[in-house]
Length: 98
Image (cartoon, rainbow, N blue to C red; front, side, top):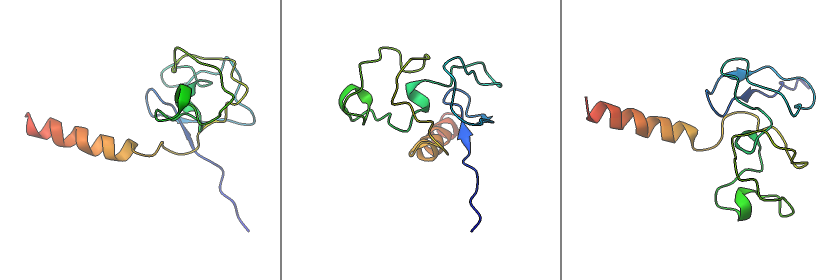
């Protein structure tokens, strides 16, 4: 059985990240220098959940795009659900106002 390596993307620039092993606290995107170990790159991040996190024991993090020490962090593989729909909607809006 062949398993593909997961693909990771930066929350800020959507650039593909080349990560091996655990994501370090000081890890930065090599495209835009955005922090990688942050809520917006975590698979537990959910704006509909308490503290914007599906992990019930997580602490409140005020800046979701800044690096943090959360022990529940797990890098989101692939694009976050809804990103494609958001991009399609933005493209339609841009076309409407041109």
